[in-house]
Amino acid sequence: MMTSTSPREAAAATPWYRRPRTVQPTVGFEERLACTLATLRAAAACSPAVLATSLSAEDMVIFHLIVREALPIAAFALDTGRLPRATLDLWRAVESRYGRPIERVSASAASLRALADAQSDSAIYESSAARHRCCDVRKTQPLREKLQGNACWVTGLRRAQSAGRASVFHHAHDHAFGLEKFNPIADWSDDDVWYFIDAEQIPVNRLYDEGYASIGCDPCTRPTRIDEHPRAGRWWWEAAASGTATECGIHVAAHANASATQTRTP
Ligand code: SF4
Image (cartoon, rainbow, N blue to C red):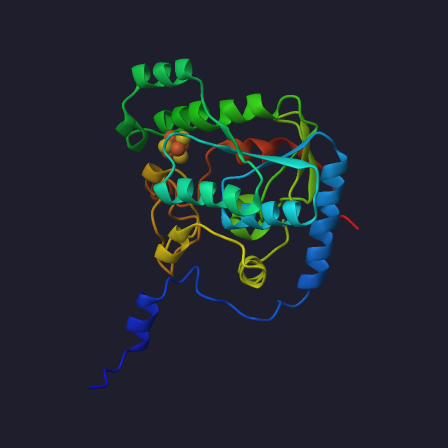
């Protein structure tokens, strides 16, 4: 017997964020892609250059292009010890598929012991200070140490991701970390990202198929509804209290202290 499915049921059955977008490039995409490639080549010339990847869809686009274009840009990811299983699975799958390692960077055992002595795992939900302390120990400090000795870092930040990222440039000097920062897909839209992922068959985190729009540590990430901002699932309890999307501290510092040297790479 035939059964009919209402539009609401169909929408609920289809993850909204990862829904196939279009088989055609979006208007102006080829120009944006050319700009992205030029930015990546500029980053590669700024040796030593390194991609800080969270294995997000954006970072997968950049990693794919680095390998495809054979650019001398190394890659590392912060293993906070709190990453979702799906992210760890993707990490292994990406290294296997591309034949390129993604270096694991994590906090020292001593700093993790000090964090555990200072607060419980659940303290991150109880105070903003505790949450920031956890991010500082597990993410910002290891990142700072890893970036030392590099001339530039490459990220997948996009202006469309949040109001706080609306001023992201393709290339700026990052005063917070003391090196050049390149954001090759700064001007890409959501549709650009998913069009390119589908067109180039780039592997992505399976959590996008489960309603996650932005993926970080397991305790601090939840799926989002279609009426929510894509980053509303990150530190949602803080966002609910403040009414704005929030950040872990890595890129907030970078925005606040960055001075753009160019907005478009020819
Ligand atoms: S995102 Fe959450 S678990 Fe991860 S480092 Fe920050 S507070 Fe800790």
